[in-house]
Length: 295
Image (cartoon, rainbow, N blue to C red; front, side, top):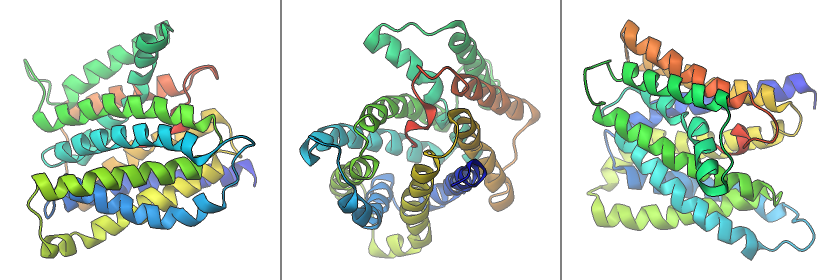
């Protein structure tokens, strides 16, 4: 595969993920976040299973070894996804997509806490841009941040932890098995919780069927497959920029499909957050790879 074709596949994956925020928001009008996450990942498990079963493990690697990392990844995935879905109920998909992308800014600071690898000046500057951007994106009020935006920003912290787990799983070179087992864990946690803490009906699930199908098949199975193939044939810097465009596509979907409008100050805040994310992603190869995982 040529680098151009790989870049185009990544661009398509970013488009699918960006538009996916629209379906995440519309689903919340009918069902709860746990049910949406559980059914979405259950569909993804079925779609990914053939690839996971055919994937050859490196010598000495076993399913049980990948399963331990996948279980932890699945727990973090549920936490991040529930916060994100809860935030998108009241926040615009533009702000949620931009704030979620902060996980790549937060990840180096988690590495600092866990491994004592202090972030460089560039990472600190990106963090300052992100903080100012969050304040402006939330309306630039005197104090506080809107609840939906706060939940989305908090989800970015959990997604940053998920990124570190995914990065470690990637070292075992079994992406399909890890993803399959991770989503088995997610579905196994989210579906029982949906029955316990949410009030859903079959009629409501049917009303959200298109959102669930898009999230489970396109956003999860297809887009991940495209990214998994393309990342083997392009440069990390290309991948970082192209995958960051997910937020741009989400903003376009919110504008065209939901009529969402941001003030000039909010657009400025989104631009600052986006700049901070790009600044972190265009970094040396010894940093955590931003494309190692996707929320």
